[in-house]
Length: 278
Ligand SMILES: [Zn+2]
Ligand SMILES: [Zn+2]
Image (cartoon, helix red, strand yellow):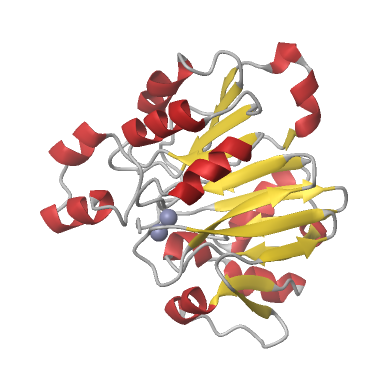
């Protein structure tokens, strides 16, 4: 399987997972021009995308959905609540309403919905499998429910949210209500919560941990790297950012010990696209 984060952060998320010639996108929270540019950067043909799965209706997950799906005539799978909340008006032939725990087959990939806690109408995460390798995409996680624990226990590749550093959020300039919205159990995972969860539920199966959905205000790549690198010496560790795509990873590297290294694509994100956070 090949996979990458085309964008990851509180201002835009888009994840690509492919098996052979068939691929899916999880969320399109950056505009289509940037999706296309970033795909070109790593050699992805947009025509390989056979389906788009949406986790929930927040802007950082749907910003580019309408244009991209229409331009390439790709069906969009989302829950009724997410569709209602998104206010998207997709053509009937492109919208596929799913339940939060549905299992959808796209080419050689099975995509399973994982219900989660988040301040959206009917949110879910997704577990994507080719029958051999399991990739979990877990962002916008309000709290660690049994679903999250079970997914972490079965994945070979885990994309996990590390949204905020607790001290930075606490000391930062966000109004009190917004701070509480982030940490009230329906918002996001902090670096500490993500690390504790990772350490408790990871198994020897896990080969690659990608940390993402970092807040631009309340977190830094350096803090996330500091928190996790000590515990990831036997697996590959990557940090996905908002400013550029990660490399296009291939699960074939799992067999090669020499590539199990700490990998950080980019340590600073100055001067790039700025979107409002949500
Ligand atoms: Zn959200
Ligand atoms: Zn989000």
